Length: 140
Image (cartoon, rainbow, N blue to C red; front, top):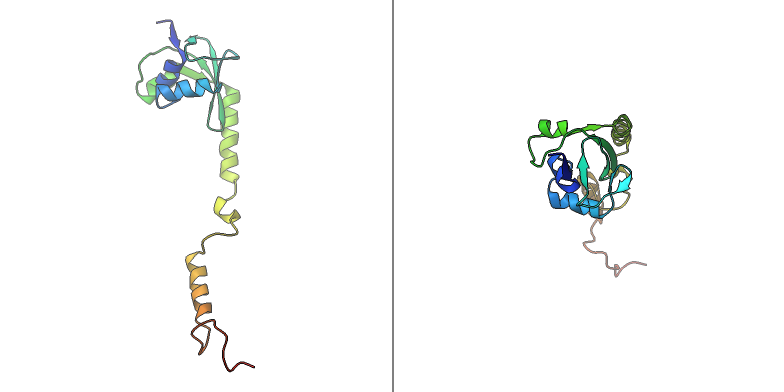
């Protein structure tokens, strides 16, 4: 087998979980073969360069082998070789995520934490002899 459809190769190389997901990403113009936007029926061969996007990550790989069967991950990794630029971009993205701030710290409003809820309950008990927020009759 010298050539294979790009959607089937992406599935066999384990870039996408299903072949239909691979075809969907190709349909959204997120996959390029040798610099050209690919269609699902485009055939790849050994030596082609495939650029694809997985989430926010852009990957570029060189095709090293062709397989129409989806096999175990170590076998699938032998079907391609990732470029140095792509690996450097992955490392930079990984480092950016590691150094990023905790998303929960940016929330200023929302549900109170357990400690804040206890403080609110204690504050509501400080009504004294009054049991409601209504206006006192003997107030001046």
